Image 1 (cartoon, rainbow, N blue to C red):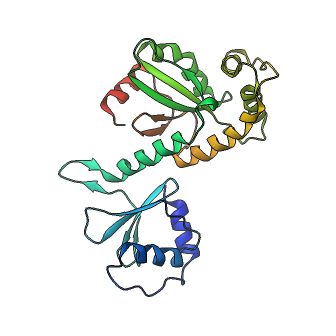
Image 2: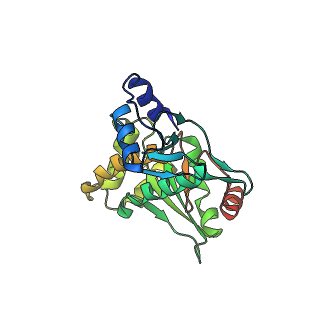
Image 3: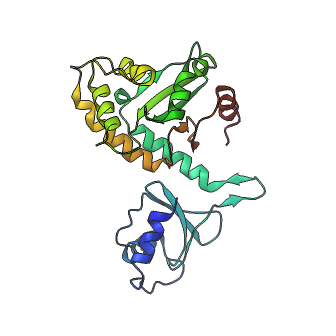
Length: 244
């Protein structure tokens, strides 16, 4: 999670300025940008730990001292409440990232009856466990789970799968095309809207922000994020408790 931020730290070794203690927020941002010129800070806020600030950059979160001289890699917990404060922040980051994907670029399998939960699945038809999840979509829908597919070529957009996903989004019926890929490798119906091709790049960028490590990768409607297949009943229990 922290590789990008800490790579910037090591790359900028020796550039750290002499900052005074307890920098005001704007001054702290200035110190960080001087120390790590390539760092884009999406948000910064004070944590419950006095003098320690949380910074969010892309899909990463880290903690920095008020003078900008020390950075902490790790997870921040509230011990009495048993709350993972780092993941609370990342859940919001993930949901914001998902909101940036155009809904028309997602393949939606709605819940039967009242939708109790929604999951976004980064999926690739060349992935065996993506096939297994696809075979169980109806069970998830029956359990009240709406599933949104974000088409993601795990080996890159220039691969055969990447080209197939482009064709699927460009087809006259993207959902039927995706179903065809999963069921029998059927080629999509030609002649659809190819303005959607750029959406695959957006999905790939979003995958990095939500912490994708493999497919299928799932993000819940509360921002929980994990890679790997889960059986329908196990998935429902996870969604109901709101924790991994």
